[in-house]
Length: 75
Image (cartoon, rainbow, N blue to C red):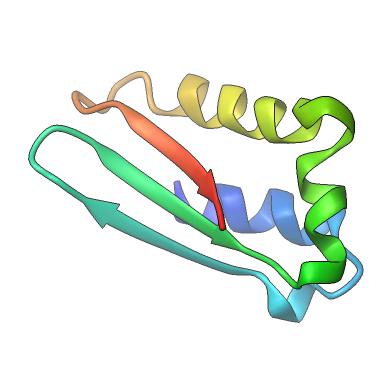
C-alpha cells in the first residue's frame, strides 16, 4: 500500500522527492501517513478534497483482501 500511495502522490506533485509515506499499524487498523511539501498540499487534496477522496478510494479498493481497514491521512 505504501508504494501505491507514494506512486500516486509523486505523480501529482511538483516536488516528488519531498513525498514521504509511512505506514502505522494498530490492533484494529492500518494508517498510511502521506506527507508532501506545503506548496504541493493543494494538488494532493484537490478542489473540495476530490483528489484526496480518490486516493482513499483507490487504497480502499486495493486493500480488499487485508482483514484490517486501511486509512490514508494527509499530513
